[in-house]
Image: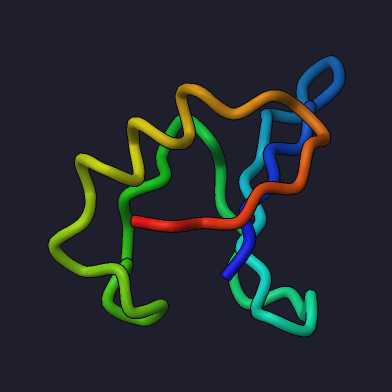
Length: 67
């Protein structure tokens, strides 16, 4: 799974994208509210680790999600 942080403009907030191994979009959520419905993506119980990854992400840089 891959993760990328997308910079918002003006009134549009920053977003997080989760993509699978073939780079197909599987989740798209606001960066300021990232910890909803994580069980859908196989990430339940990893809220703290995911929040840490999101806070350290650079905008526009695709990174392999390993938590």
